[in-house]
Image (tube, rainbow, N blue to C red; front, side, top):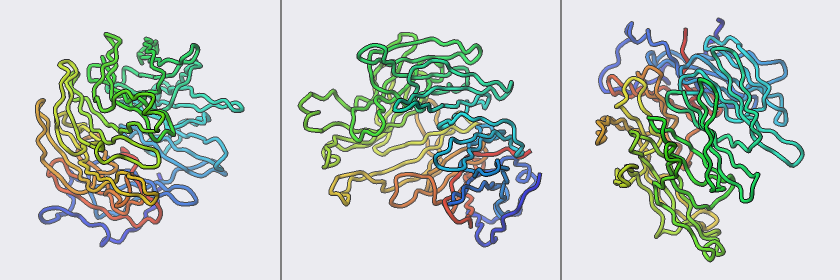
Length: 448
């Protein structure tokens, strides 16, 4: 395989550790994963890789051959680092071509599906391809699933509305949950289809609520799904809370209790609750939820008296909740090598007056932390600035992350430095980037 080398000044690649840097050992050079990141420019993107086990080595440019007349617009890496899905386009209005590569950059298969936000199963066996369809003024979503082991494509023939943010793989990849809003009656209702990936037969559950659900998260025993209600696109104020859909009982269990039903008078005055939630199952009975928001009035923003944020632990069986932290602990991830080792981002916020005189929230502090969990309590063991774009290497050796961009509430793009936490020594390795344009990590590649 032909690779071009992008030379980076050694003075720009700095190892930040406590102690003295020593040359790479054989154990370091045996590390087979590389962090892939892309540089976004006007002419498209360029793919690069970094080796945290050899931080003074220059980044490598990874050439991905494109179809003539098309440019590379995106790359999606599988969880095991063995596959890449590249998006290529010839223009903004043209449907994209999706090309699947193995990690040694060999083209495997093309898809002409016009998909949105592809999703890998946790075991990298399946690739979910949401498809956006339109005919005149009508549009709808359908789903296809590609089996990487058998090279077969399964098309979902259900004609109901499937929203691309309303499906979820179970942790063991044996279940796929798909939410659709069915409108063959008035009012519409919510339908949940649970597919067994061994047979692709579905069990269907329904609920009279017409709202769109999103951010589905499976419980560890595959018996329940946590979700956010509601998730209408393009709405700046709405009623939202975290629920659990218990499959054995086929019931909804309210969890976060942040918003209460509003009266017609409150809706008329354009005042409602607006909350954002992230959540994580600690065990089949316990859900950790971080929430931020408050009462929102159009033209005025958030009310100081109702604005709040914190992180809580809910026991579904007992119906109890416990304040874990008065700040937001979010973007939770578990080390692939240690189920008791967690990483997360600790955030603080404040309300401020925007240029339009609306009270909005902004980030004031952010740190990445690593903690152990013994089943009852978290014990932080490491903390440092940053926390954006966090992702463990598939072997659990390194946690990659970038800094939070001051003045922004998002984490992608503009990175000039990528950092790595060594899980064995709990030291931070910082590598500066020379690439111009917008740089952001996309995952770990296995280098054969």
